[in-house]
Image (cartoon, rainbow over all chains, first blue to last red; front, side):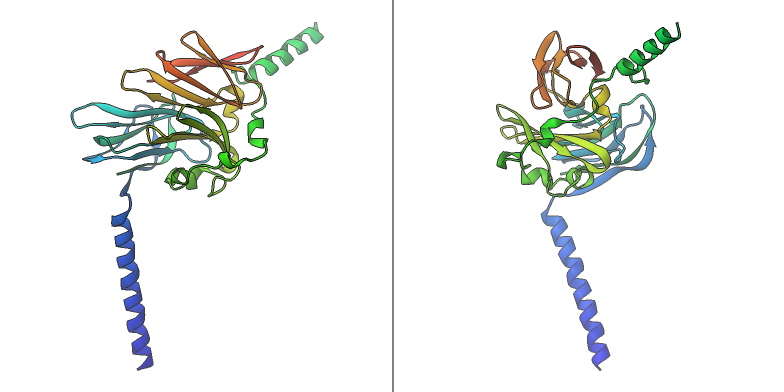
Length: 122
Length: 175
């Protein structure tokens, strides 16, 4: 009897924890990793182009050995480019959500480099 | 003859670092060693971005220094993980922030910089440089390095130069 009660308590606690995580995610910024652990050639472009969103953040992360030229930018469905930032190494650009855009990232060095991830938020 | 050849080799190593690129300084940034002030703390909003956790050596941005303020633009230098150094820009009027982190060795042959392309096509270029660099220049306009940082606004070209009294380094922004 005591064991059955304990199991019910564990299930209830797990359900509450899952609900809390869902609510926290819905209340805060939505995030999406759109390029993940791959070599990126100079001609590759990572993109989150499934749905135009009111983006507020875009980031490229080479890793702790960063030193190469990079770019993050956004493009509206009509083709207008906004929030275009070039960096030496790992790079982020945070801004107000003025436009509905697709997010892009690129390695702008002359040779291929491993990119850990590119991530956007809206 | 032998001595002349050895001297020439030494000069090449000092000037080019043996990698074909001109070197200035050793990558040290004395502005990060200055005594901390309240204004050196990074805004909380910057610390909450995923970038901070992945790149900064301390989760609270410990060791950061306010390098320059120009109008509503503030530039911070931040110690990064595993030998990286970071430059963070915060524009309170535009409500924007950005950051770049790279291995410290980048500072020997150039700058850890960011270049924002504005709506009119010009670029706002901000950079962190190592000790020994005294200026940054673009489109024939030169600005002094202060506290290991510089700001070049309204850059029309796609490159800039950083340098000292004795040497200069050309950097292609791209775009």
